[in-house]
Every structure is written in structure tokens, then in C-alpha cells.
Length: 222
Image (cartoon, rainbow, N blue to C red):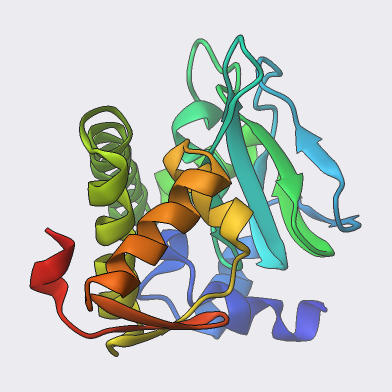
């Protein structure tokens, strides 16, 4: 694992701009360990403290927020190279606001916050990367809050489809998640998602073929 770990971390925003050799040399100055989580394992529960600086080397984590009624909203899916919850690592109130579990077998590089601080303090590029990382999270959460609180169901689904098309650079979108998982990202019922997709297809906005959706006319989704 360690032989390729440094190459994996070159894709991490935290180590952006550094070579695998430079990352290896930096990690030799701190203590860390490799932790394995099986699929569907609880990584943390809402309210638990963020005690470690964890980088995902392989696998995927899903973060969810649960309301008093039991309703869940999927906040994000965290994939390889991500530093988990960077805004809470050094926070005075470091209680996690979300519950997180593994979507598949996941491998993590774990270090104490003090070790992460050493990397930030001793390398100017990493320090700037960390600042940019925190800024990006603020932008992401602002957009997420706006989408969840202000968008109608129709607007949420249209936003998802257009965003996916942009990310995949194609008007034909391949869905990697189930309909239920997609509905959870919006905080809506699966039935509401299916009804909206059916309406879009009926008015000629999209064409649905299993887990593949083609956007025919984006104006008809407005």
C-alpha cells in the first residue's frame, strides 16, 4: 500500500502541487498509520469529536445529517485523496455535525492533529492548500444550503442533472448512485424524485434508459 500511497496523495487538494517524492519526504517527518474500514461500517456519528486527521487512500465515505423526525439528508460522498472534515480538526467545538459511514471497503491514512499542524507549519504550499481547502468547503456548504432550503423539488432535480452533465462533460449522464441515494442528497422522498424525472421525460426534457439519462432540452426543465 505504501509504495503507491504517495502517488495517490498527489491528487489530494491538501498536497496539491507536490510530487510523490516530496510527499514521501514530508510524511517521513510525522507519525501516521494505515486504518482499514469494511463496507457499511460507521466511521463516526453526529456529535462525536473529530479526533484525527484522516486522508482517504481508497474507498468512499457517505456523510448524512439526520433531523429530529428521522429524516436523512446526504451531505456528501467522500472519495480517495480527501482529507475528512478539515474544518473540525482544529475547531474548539469539534463535534461532528454529520454521521459518516463507509460505502465500500475503505483505507485511511490517519495522523493526530498535531502531526497535520506540523505539515502545515513547515511547508508553505501545504499551508496555502489548507487555506484554499477550507475556503472551498465554505463555498460548497453555502451552495448546498441554498439548494436544500430554497429550491423546489423540480429545481433540485434539474440542478442535479445539469451538474452531472457538466462533470461528465456529456449530455448523456451515467448514474453511479441509486434513485434512493440521489433523493437523499436533496432531502426528498424517492417517490418525489421518480415523479419529477417522469414529468421531465414526458415533456421531452430528458430520456431515461435505466441508469442512463440523456438531456434532450434543458430549457424544458426550468
